[in-house]
Structures are given as C-alpha cells and as structure tokens.
Amino acid sequence: MTMKRIFYITLACSLFGLFSCHRDKKGEAPEGYVEYQGELLKKTEPLRYDSNGDGVIDEKDKSIEILGTNLNITQAPDGKPFYTGSGSTEGGESGEGSGEGGSKPGSSCSKVPVGEKLCYLDLAKYCNQNGGLYAFETTVNTAQSDVKTSISNVDANQNTIPDYIEEIRSASTMNALATTYSKMYSKETEQALEKAANNAQIGEAYLAECIRKAIVVALEEALYESSESVDIASVETVVKTRVTAAIAEAVNEVGMYEKIDKAALAKITESVSNKISEGVADNVATSVSTAILSQYEAQVASGAIKNVQGICPNGYHIPSDVEWMIFEQALGMSAADLTKCGETEITRGADAQVVKKMVDNFGFNFGGYASINGTYAQRGEAGVFWSSTTGTDMKGDYVWVRQIDTSYSGVVRFKMYEKSGLSIRCFKD
Image: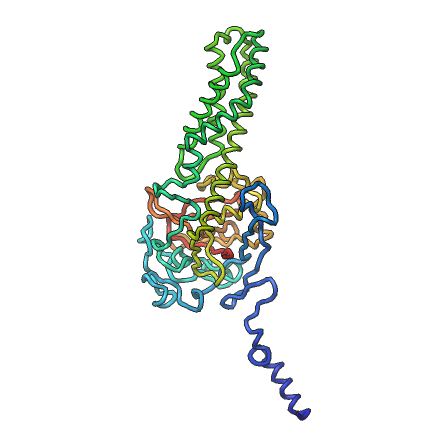
C-alpha cells in the first residue's frame, strides 16, 4: 500500500470515523450515561433496600436504580409515534391526538394534549433544562384504562382495600400487638400507681387487661380511618388517648381514685401512655412498611408484576407507587412517613432530607407543570412526577404522583385526577 493511499484512508477515518472506521462505537454514550433519542440520560448510583425484610441492608439485598435526568423526547421507544388517544401506539402522528384515554374529572375540557411533549411556556430551552411535560397517557404510551398495575396496592381479593392494610387490621395482629405492649408496661404501671396510692392494690393482671382492650379499641378506630393508607400519627394519638382513659378508669373501678394524688395520677398515665403509644405506632409503621415490601417481592417472584415501559428507554420503565416508596425509603424516609398521602402532607421524609438527596444526588429539579386549563405553573418552585399506578375512587380515576417543592420540606404523595402535564423519571427494570 502506498503512503499516499494510507494518508487518504487516515484522513477518511478522521472525518467520517463515527460512520465508517469507528462505526462499532456508533451510538455509544459517555460513561455513566444512557443515550436515548439524541438525549443523554445520566445513570445514578444503585440504592440498596431491605428487600428480604431482615431489618439489615447488606449485599444480600436488591438495589433500585433510576435515571438521573427527566425525559425529553418526542417519540415512543424504537422510533414509534406517541400514543395519541386512538387506542393504539402504532398509528397516528405525534402531536395530533386529542383522545381522552380514560375518564377523569375535568378531562373533557383539558387543554393538556395526549401525544405531545410540552415545554414550559412552550419554550424549547426549558425542555432542555428541565425535561418535557407529558400527559399520563403519553407517559405510559397507552390509554389510562389499559394500565393495570397493582404493584403499590396489592389487593388479592379485589375489595379495593390494599392487603397491607387488611393485614394490620386483622384481629389476630391487633390483639398480638395489644397484648405485647400491655404486658410490657402493666407491671411498671401497677408499681407506680400503688406507690402513689400508699400501697392500695390494683393488680398487674387487671391493669394489663384494661390496657390491652384500650389498645385494641384504639387500633380499630385509627386503622379504619382510611382504606388507602395508615396514618401513623393518628395511631399514636388515639392509642395515647385510649390508654390514658383506661388507666384512669381502672383506678376508679378498684376504689383507688380517692387514695391517689391527682397530679401523681396524671404524671403516671402520661408517662405510660406515651411509652405505649410511641411503641405501638412504631411497630405499626414497621409492620406496614414490611408488608408493602414483602408483598411487592412476592409479586416479583411470582411474575405478577408487569412493568409499564411507557416512553422510557428499553430496559427502563415508569415507576409504580411502591417503587417510589422503595426509592424514598432507600434515601432514608422513615417507615412512619412512607404511606402518608395527600397534598397537605408536606413534611414526608423531611427528617432524612429526602428532597435534598433527590436534587443533589439524582438530578431532580423543579421544572413546573402544565395544568388542565393549558397554563404553566411553578417552574423553579415545584417538580411533579408520574407513577404508573392508577386507581378509581368516588372522585373518579386517578394516578399516584410525587411532588417536590421549594416551599415544602418533604416529598408529597397524592392522587392526580386531572389531565395535567408532568415530568417523567425512569427506573431500571
């Protein structure tokens, strides 16, 4: 081969390397990134969680992984057009759809289109900075009615009550919990009361039974307040109130009331009811968290879980509500905060600075959202993210979402009923 020919081959490789001499590297993303439709999506460090439920996070446990960038694409996977409401992802042109894809309050007058990527204030620079905003049907790449995922709210008997709530509500579970804590503190209570009443007798067994019944009644009251979540704060408050009243009533029933100093009685009941209520609440929180994760792992093992890829890259999917919980718990969110829900629960995970970790370590941002009336709001103030978990209640069809907000210290978990345009994060299969 002549030197001249070698020169031209080298020059060709320099100019057209990506398409010829180095075509084996075509489409490769920089290390630590996933290339998807011309966008670089950052990979983040895997987070281990207590997947085997042994209370210890170690190498035996699984990890959860997410992409650290909001999606900003204009096509579905494999170059197909977005779902546009026609009932198929195969046809239609991106950006032309107006189908409703599910019945939700206000959907008929929504100005958030299905089948389009929206940019905040219709400015491309905001899509580049914060990612696109998408209607739910666009996100999951099908009609809302076709998304059948029970990952976050396992409901084997299909009675609309999550199994983890039914498990904690069972009579055997409540009685076992009540028995444990009544026995744990009955002796201490008996000794304190009898000392304060100049050795008047009340009896440990009698006190234990009174406290046990009070805890059962309290749990029945608190755990039936909602069939969607367990309010740990309410459990603690109701147990404290019921136990305080039960001890005072027991003192009165045995004729000890006139023999004991009222300030001493108040101090004793306050101390005991605080210990019992805090212990019961912590136990319930841990039980709920464990039940959610164990039911999730059981579904994974049985093959019952079908991830919703939506418009995420191959190998990734739209996270379910429970996968958001796993991610949040891996970031340090307490079991007591995990199932909290509602737009007023703005301190969820605040004690572990979960929002700060999401922003600092996983690239979450406050990209705003598109509202049902077609306006844009709260860029630089709020970021709202879809899950794949849907449901129906008396208000209509909904999707569980997450919101971070510069005005809130925690991650808000709530039901979205409106056809809004929200951000998308993808979790690894």
